[in-house]
Length: 84
Image (cartoon, rainbow, N blue to C red; front, side, top):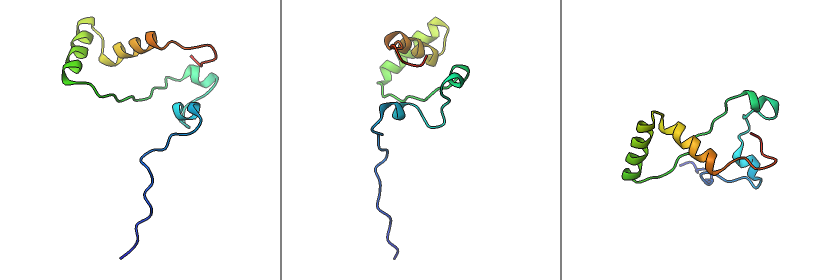
């Protein structure tokens, strides 16, 4: 019977928050301005919230993703020193 290797945690957060937010393959500097880089964000909502979000997006004639991107951009604008 072979021994199994020690299990590591699911995901370890890096000590540097910038490294945690930006992936290693993400373009940086001038290339970042030209590239349309997106990252997936998963949140848990109730079925009722999900329904209200979908209806609101439908009534506005946009996708849920576009509506939430606009909301997040309003709530969390870039601060000085941030990349756009």
